[in-house]
Image (tube, one colour):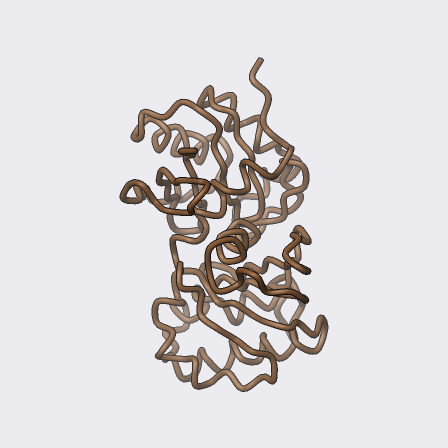
Length: 252
């Protein structure tokens, strides 16, 4: 089944057609920069442009970079505060005319790894950590999604949330070397290990492409591996989740 998967990030919004049975991307991904306002109306326009680019008519799966419950945004994350309480499913459905299923972006990336990647067949508590503008985290127990496991929101020292200190955006903002930033990311993983004792951690997101630059700095006891799907995982997982989640936007 061919489904459009969309991955919304703090810097870019990407989409591609995916075979939801095999996890294969059927097209090149199409990327449009995230509007600087990061407001609902402006971002919805970009979503519409991506749907139009693929001339697509059907259900759409979409990963969103903050806490999403039954299609509703519960926290602004790195986006504009006006996102709070917005029914994202229904907003995107209204703008595009296609039914949407929206879920947390790290949950979407986790779906890809658990169905087609290194997490396939893995039991116990498996965490997907995505490194980008923020630090996303998806959790699966014996292959079942535990939604909105937002570990990047942990307060740390003077920071309201640790992702302000340890995400890729902090590396760029402070012009940190991979050596210095990698130690911060390892500190984040140490806290994660202490709090939830996972059996496996899968690292994805854009920064995972530079895995060899920082993986030697990861010193926790839990096994930590790179997501081989890397930056495509959000798109692939969103398409798969569209079939499994039940909170579709409603066409009037």
